[in-house]
Length: 260
Length: 64
Image (tube, rainbow over all chains, first blue to last red; front, top):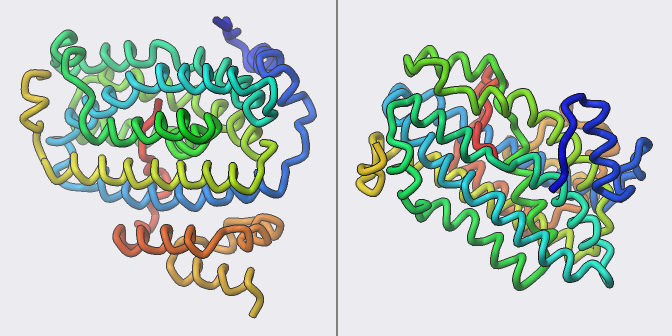
């Protein structure tokens, strides 16, 4: 396990060490393939913003907000185990595969950055009046399984670097404090419900910068670049569907009923 | 019209890319986006509708 220092300067040093020189103080020049991949991810993020704007501006948003939190937990609880599997596969391939080495270096650090976020979110769900154990017992939704399961498929049967597509979309738009405050006001929930969101608003900006620096410098073949872009677009589709399904259900789905 | 210009126009017309938000070297990379990938983006844009104006602070908030 990598212990992450608190200060940004020390965190950067830890990042450099964990990546074993992949990202140095003067980062390696972006490859054309890496920069093109980041452009695709950026365009996909723009579409996700449109879906998100519809979601957050819906008049019924306060009613379906608890479902959003439960679905978010569904995804977050899967993410560290997913990255751990990608890391295992990357380490297996690393001796003969530079892309796998870079992937492993990035994941080694990022897994520790994301560890226990599911527990933070559970605390917020409890603050929103939900039962911790009932939420924990609730299996991940079909939509969460579609989102995360696709990554397992590519990790096992293609290349673990596919996960960069997932991370590029999912980490691509950290929440902003201004928006979190708007949601708090509209939903009427106490501020304790939004602790996890606020922590992400603070930390995910750094995460995104590190992720971008890594992706643009990835040693990519054309096939690998296409794979990661496909992973990003599939992640986008899955997230749009999640937002649409939560909004159209309006209230808790029956499978969530015992979680509240 | 070059391949790059044609792809750029398609993305702009569909409301997926705004030139002013990208540097020239980034725009040059549009040629690297395959026709199939552009189709995926255009289809999704059609399904989602136009981007909301003045809502730049709205973020997906699906984070891990």
